[in-house]
Length: 422
Image 1 (cartoon, rainbow, N blue to C red):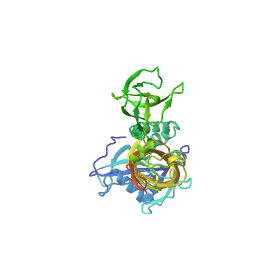
Image 2 (cartoon, rainbow, N blue to C red):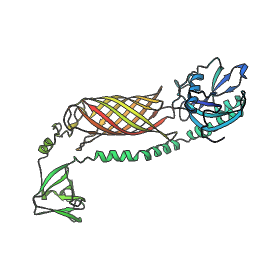
Image 3 (cartoon, one colour):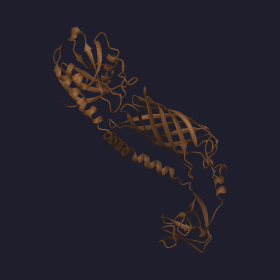
Image 4 (cartoon, one colour):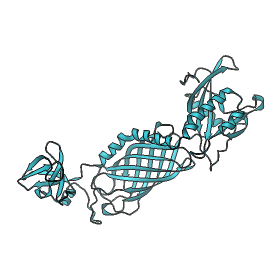
């Protein structure tokens, strides 16, 4: 094993690509071996080939050679194993060979068919590591295979430890986005105006009379209090309020007079919908949603990040209660792309009823990840830019996870974007 840094492409170079697949996280992986023409030795070996002038880098050369010699597409771009070696070139001088690995998806629970190049190979086999070792002729093939087994296959076998470690790493990376979503969901619109009617109204640290006094408001002062009161053990109701110096506390309900909530909402342009006694805080005159998100994706197994995007079209199902009638439930179809992996899935959407301007959503997804069955889960917050009923734009923040049901492919994503509702 040598320095893992890529050499300059002006040198004489080759790539070696180990292609592999597995049916499930618990099954034994298979590697692909190709048999060279008899006049070229008739040896069994992985994909190999020379770096050409049009290749932008070694990764591009590995992908090209893989597709030319097998007609297979990897789930993700070929990844360097960190193994390189040099050997005398038949054209004179030294040649450096860099080793890569690439996973491909199973087809109906079986390794995919390979279309070999008859100018270079006569046949192919999908083999276990132990079976492949017995057929290999060169030590420069055996050592990379053992490294692949140790770095990819054995680490994937530590289930569920590796999955949990990967998920913890992803959650750690996505915590800032998740915190932003929670902050956004507690919108500043969850308040109402009130006027102090007592000679002096004390603000308590906790909702009970014996709690520490944080400050007081004089008779006639107008303040903002929470829309819903809380009760103490004696049954007395309290509103949450913010003091003049910025502290949060509680004020007794008998000391204030709450303004007309419906009139204030109308003045703010928020449509009312009297359904089950609830008010719709953002209107309900839209049925279809077109949404696009820019995402940061995290591969749980490789523990590597990448850029991705998500597009979804959905329609409200006409189910719901309170102010969310016609849009509390929805169904859509979405497309998520992460590097060379694509998820096409149906989404079942549920929106939570809140008194806030923003709207939390949960999505359950089921579909295809490449050619394999896949599923996923997403939590999002929708923040409308307009409070009128009907067509409008909204912002989205979302954290999600999806993966193949049978193969060891799991992604976590976090990001934001825009949606058009009409």
